[in-house]
Length: 397
Figure 1 (spheres, one colour):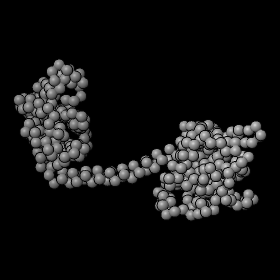
Figure 2: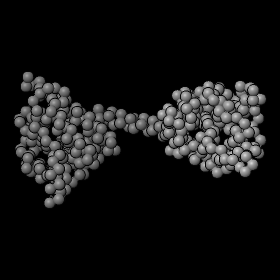
Figure 3: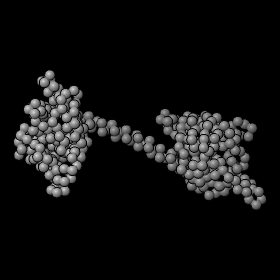
């Protein structure tokens, strides 16, 4: 911590006479905003860090020396944080209701772009600061601790109060800092601002990534339109024949494919778009007692196959869903389905040739990455449910 003594203050920044309403503003530092700042204004970025002095930079206390001289302390950590903020493009301002040599000493040590002193009305002072710096008031972050500071929080882009700020300041602030004034509040404010900058950069990079992901998905959907309707039509026809004959559909898969199995079974047992009677559909992924018993007493590769052997009958459909096309428990279930005389349907990705060898009908989504495969799977299942329901309801009405 450094101590600033009232009796021997360093030279104050150039300022106008105290009687002037513009007193204590450093004229050269308060010229118009740079092009970068004008660009920032368009995006609503924060460009100015405005600090109250007592209760923010200092802890609001005055130390008296043997000769009656006054001194206040400022943490080096806060001064270092101001330097970091300036290096990141922030302009620094002091906005204080105090005046006199102590303010001169603090301003000289901090080196702000603007000093507004003797400003009890912080709301008006911050509007004045915005005019002098050539920025929008929404580009100002103001750190204040008192009731009169709280009155300005509503107009700035970000209003911060230290942990020991007045009740009103803490209530009206956009964010309450985790430390007290004079004990690292400025450093905490700068840390928060830098996190916001990182978040904004991430948001911009996220936007680019999200556009790329959407384009990849659209490309996969275009391939789906070109390549997939024929085999999906065959799957839908198999479902219509089985359901019309009173047969059931069994689904299995792991992870996201297990979720798809449950989803589609629910669409068939419940309804998709049309009010109708339920159809027999079972997801083999839902009974944890069976799954854990079989997995523990035999092997995880048998968790679906054992259920298929118990439930499948000739003419039923057993659906195995695996994006890789290689899940051993799905492949084993399909092999046992063949032994039971069931129709085997597989859902996988472009590289799922192994699964195709274990099925009678296999939809290989025209994609390589698992997320794109899963997206096409749910599109395919919704399409199948819609056309199967329409065909069966139409023929039974």
